[in-house]
Image 1 (spheres, rainbow, N blue to C red):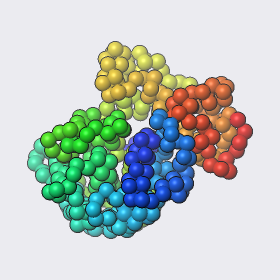
Image 2 (image 1 turned 90 degrees about the horizontal axis):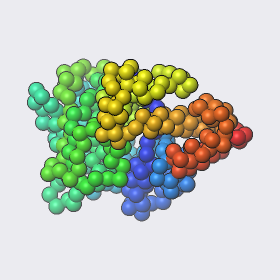
Image 3 (image 1 turned 120 degrees about the vertical axis):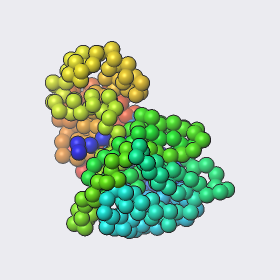
Image 4 (image 1 turned 180 degrees about the horizontal axis):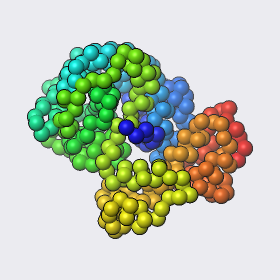
Length: 340
């Protein structure tokens, strides 16, 4: 599988922070542990790395002693995710793996369950809320899905295609981000909540071992928050094509469309339907490369500006603020080189 180093919208950080505040806990120490600067929360376009989001996820789980972020009337105590992975690791195949992961979540949560309905055409995860429980926010459904889906994908060693997703909750602010997480065929305000998966994984053998579990747990959930995103959209194909080249060699829209076997107008129309443009994809890749370099802390901002295609640091600063609503220095470790 292609290694994905993408970033995550700050709106998902805000959703996690709201969960913490609803529990009456100050999120500031958790954000600090994750290296997320408070000014980023005030910038709607800001992004954080998957590592930062994973660190925040773990910090919240420890801080609340609840790995479900207080979104269920029964807390998912710290260590539950490890126990779920250990239980699922002994599964024979994908069918047993998804049965064990959803079954484990049913044991630790009271309000929400996901039941597996399998046919030859699809595997449907049907989400149900206990009678009398008010509708959950999308973030609760997504948290449940990420935990189960990430583990099962890892166990069988590949991304399981998500074919459709329907949720009875209202559309969240980060709708585009959730489409990256699930699939393009995502709808809110539906009569029922479910996610349809391609069924081939049911017969796939579990290939992980106790040894590989240690590495997985050390890097989870950052290791799978972006790794198993939807790779089938045209936008994902465009990103893959660009990542194979140095920035200086990125082709024009017409040349890339020809390379992908489509007309430029068709490519633009399909990208628009996915909520993107060719320019927005290029900007997002440069933005993510810049964020990763800024957070590594071993290069000056001037060097990073050149690396992502800017001759002048001032032009990079302007573009970065346009991309993220924040300053490059907001993403720097405290001990990073300060030269501009």
